Image (cartoon, rainbow, N blue to C red; front, side, top):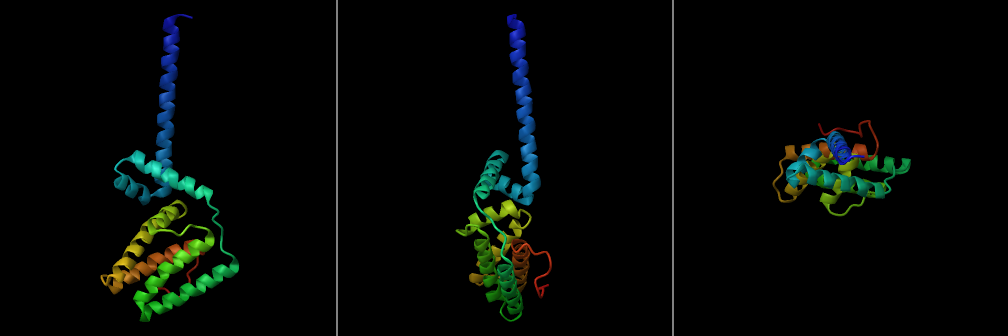
Length: 184
């Protein structure tokens, strides 16, 4: 085989491999963007590059694969649904306390289902893998809760936080029907 043919074959192989690599990288980016939605864009902005954001999202997915996330028992689901209904009722008279307790209830459900419940940023990152459309609202609700603790949240802010927590709480309970009274 001549040196020219061998060089052409090697060059052709390199080109094919480069095209395949670019295709799979674009597909991975598209899959991550589709799955994570606004969380993908938020992380690209936070990390500064698409590559760093995608590395982080991949690490989140790998972390979650190592965990055993389990559904709630029927009794657990019923118990948490009742606790949630109580907090929604409490919102009318004590919105600040109800929102703080809603934050705690979300954390308790996460813990019972097998999510690690360390610091908030890690909880939000974990939630983003299984519930990517709700993590932005979870962050917003948590921020409102922190503002409330500093005396800086309005009643309207608290109502929004309660709705955000409610939506995530429903997902965590794997419940699609309304949980009692609405705060709307």
